[in-house]
Length: 334
Image 1 (cartoon, rainbow, N blue to C red):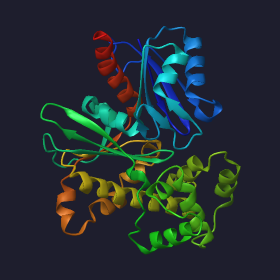
Image 2: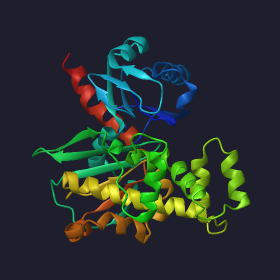
Image 3: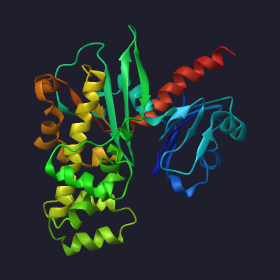
Image 4: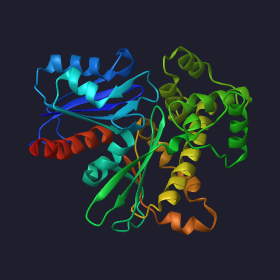
C-alpha cells in the first residue's frame, strides 16, 4: 500500500493507493491546508491515524527542488528529508520528487477526460513535451523520449527573469522592480503574481474598482479567487480584475511559448495548476494563443504545437504512478 501526496504551498492532497486499483483510483484521500501543519510528518501522521489503513511506502510531490533526497518547500517554511520521513512514519521506502516532475510523470497515462485541448496541433511521436503549471507559484518541467519511454525532468524555470512583451507589461516590470531585486515569471504569473498585477493596475489609475469587488478582495484571506471571479464574471464586471486576468493570460501564453522553444516541444505542451484551471475560460480566448505564437519567424512552428490543460490532480497521480511503479520494484528486489 502506497501513501502519495502533492505538497503545495497552499494546499496538500494525500491519498492511499494499491497496485490493483492504480494511480487514478485512491482508496482514501483528503485535502488539507498546508500551513496548518509544522511538517510533512505531522500532516501524514494525522491522516494515517484517521484512516487506519496500513502503508509501507510513500511518494510525495513537493513544490520545490529535490536534491539528494532533500527538499525545501518554496512557499512553506519546511525542510523535508526522505530518510527522516521514513523513520518518523515507520515506512520502508520514501521518495520525494519535484511536483512538476510528478505532473510530467503522469502525462503518458492521462486519460482523454483529464485534458482540455486549447490547440489540437500535430504531435510528433517521441517529441519532447513541455509542462508549465501556474499554482501558488509557477512550475515548469519537460519530458524526453529515451527510445522506449518518456523520462520526466524537473526544472526551476518559473524563477527565470520576467521579460515584458508590451507597454503594459513594461509598466508592470518597472512597478515590480521598485519592490523586488529580481522579478521572475513566478512573481507575475501565478497565485503569488495575480495580486501584484492587480495592485499595479490599481496604482497606475487604469480604472476605478467597483465597490463590490473592492470589498470582496479586501475582505478575502486570499484575494486571488476573488480577482479571478470578478475578472471572468460578466454579470459583475470589474475592469481592474478583467485586465488583471488578461495580462496574466498574456504572460502565461508568452512563457509557455518560451518553454516550448527551449525544449522543442514537438510532442506538445501541457498546462496544469490551480490558476490554469480557474482561468480556463480566458485561456480559450484569443489572447493566450496570440502570445504563445508571437515568436517572430517561429510563429508557424508554434501554431503546429498541441496545447492541453490538465484538469485532473496530475501531481498526485504522478506521485502515485511513480510510487506504485518504482518503489514497488525496489521492494521486490530487497
